[in-house]
Length: 367
Ligand code: AGP
Image 1: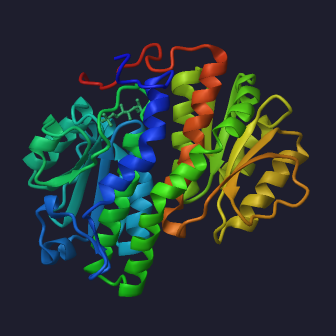
Image 2: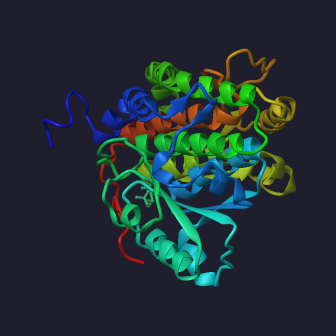
């Protein structure tokens, strides 16, 4: 283990820093400039079959479920078919309706998560078609699905998943463009997304370079017993995943909320004692998100804003982390990276066992 960890103090640190290289490798050979699409031969679906699906249902657990929500939004944006993500752990217990024209996608790093595997079997028993987005080659979910896309993130040791999640998000972007290009997504828009994906490895590296700054903010945030992570629409799954990572290794209470819902209740909790991490992308919701941040600041809530270059926050009293802008549909991928570093450095400053957090297993193979 010592050898494999290289110069890093923890596997989580090593795995976060591998991302530019592993994502580059994952994209190799899968982006097709000629047809402005992604080549996902492992799905074993002809363009005609891909076109016939009228809905996409994503199933995963924990962080995989949250990244599934990012994926659902990419699919709705690019392919314009209804898509959603559900916790696989709930799905099988609610007698789900399995439809023949729905594409089911099981997403899992380990490929051994019992809840996700049982969801796959339930779908298949009822005649549904399920493909996998899986990291571990030859794992149970990968074997049992009717085709799929390997994530190629390499081995992930830390319980808190980082690179595998980034690969899932990139995998969903490729699936979304592939589904879009057999429908109404134009060549130009397909090319725009393909070019956006090509930039991801360098842009991830640019976020990782800000580690020292993020570590400083993390120490401050870790001092609070509880915090909010907020985002809306495409930013909400980012907030959910950010809160999950933070809880997992810092053991601090972190709650994700839709920014738009704050005023319907949780705003009552805002005070000097409760920091908020706000996801504020440069997109069509920018002004609304900035407005919400000002409301928090007006109630003396400490703020950390994760945003894009070129965003003017005015007089807002907030710490900020700036990530490179990509295409709107792909922004969630990069906005998640600083939240990995934030959780890592918060846990480090609290002296926790980062790679093996208490009460958790890397892969949950029991129900
Ligand atoms: C992520 O940091 C967590 N350890 C956890 O939520 C994980 O994503 C979940 O248990 C699913 O695991 P899988 O991807 O191996 O199926």
